[in-house]
Length: 623
Ligand code: C2E
Ligand code: MG
Ligand code: MG
Image 1: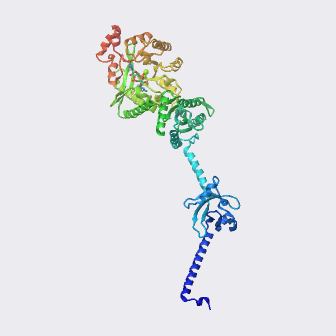
Image 2: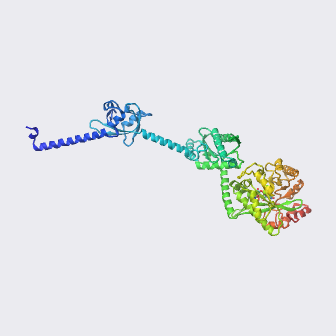
């Protein structure tokens, strides 16, 4: 009897169902096994305890070059390694986290290591716990990433470094200084920020050309780098500005020493394209934590200190103090207000007579700029002329003064006054940055005047220092041009600068004005008397007339007469007055002594001989 036919029908049906199910499971299992074998992903099974390899699919066997049998003799440690820490790698392989792939090197039979990324997971198998690993060759990806990184690094370097000098730039500083400040804060250390600006670099650039300027900047950068420690940051902020960050400094002396070393290193001549160039630098220093808590504040304060160094005559180093900050804010305020003043007609010109002591006539008027602020009233020129020079505002201001002088002179002329020469004060910057001879020619012509109406007052440094202007013309050439036009040249504030005889001779100036500081104590201070005596004697030999400025008292006047001074100016004769008040001087009216009714009292109280009084009160006529 057939075994199956002997079975009851129900039992047979049950068995066939069972067989069908297990055949189905068997074929599903074998499909899964085939899928595992044929997967293009390199996959490996290992015993979870011994880490011995228990199986690998074809893709992995191909990649490793081992047969299934050979693989079964190996463990995970034979197949994978990590350069820095093998033990850690094995630990991680023991407890794989499928969400965190591992980086390792896979060792094929050939021995040539391959970079792989391994994703592992635990497998709940029937007989024993297994670990499964999928390995992915990342050699190409790594190479690509490395190349990208290198490219990024290169771009990063380009973005954070200055092309010209190769030094780190302001972006670099912004990225690294906050960190340096943080480190100093944590370690309780001092940090110094040195803000360095080359003196008159713009002049070198303008006069020698940008090529030379660039070479000089490169050489300067090198010298700064050479004087600083490896650890210190040297940054080119742009233009001729550099920042040096000294890390972990012990005290102020150390900072001072470092700054002095830089100044000294820069003071030697530079050989640029076969020519010797000289430059100096002004340095401002701020210290962390004393002068600021963060990068912004530290940089701002070192910049303020640097401007202070410029004010102190350049080529020096200044350490920040809160007082400097106040001054800077005041300056900035003045600059903004001055710009506004120019646009809203707050500027004007007053005139002060210059008297010839022999003829008692007014022989000239000095024009003096006046700024009447709507809130503060008159602002003294010494408070804003310097700022106007630094900001270049002096150029349009100078043009305004010239125009106003010519307009006033035209009005005086049309009201029948006899004109006298009018002096205008001209700053060095004005002489360099504007074409003054051309401006004077054009403006005087427009009003129908001869340039001989004008007298230009220049300080000694303006006239004698060899400076080139924007158009390449030396200030001395500009002075020569002015002389050729017939403009008189006076040296203002004489005695406070070079006071050089040979210069005076060479430049054949038309007159000298002795600075008020020598006249003030002339009667009481023997050394002032000696100086004024020497200047007047020297000028007499050279045949140059001398004007004494700032005469306020009769005794001063008497002394000046004694010394042979020919021209005089001061409150004793008249304070600077508005154009309308000049008319009476130019019409031959009297000189107002200190003003109004007090005039006679002052004269009488002064005890001056009545004859001299008459002399001074005599009418004045110009030419
Ligand atoms: P400065 O050219 O030497 O002008 C003489 C200064 O002495 C004027 O001061 C005048 O008011 C003052 N002064 C004249 N006599 C006396 C006196 O008896 N006692 C006293 N205490 N002072 C007297 P101010 O107007 O304040 O001008 C100061 C300086 O500002 C001028 O010195 C000049 O260097 C500059 N400045 C004035 N106006 C201009 C201008 O239009 N352009 C330029 N670039 N500078 C100007
Ligand atoms: Mg003057
Ligand atoms: Mg003066």
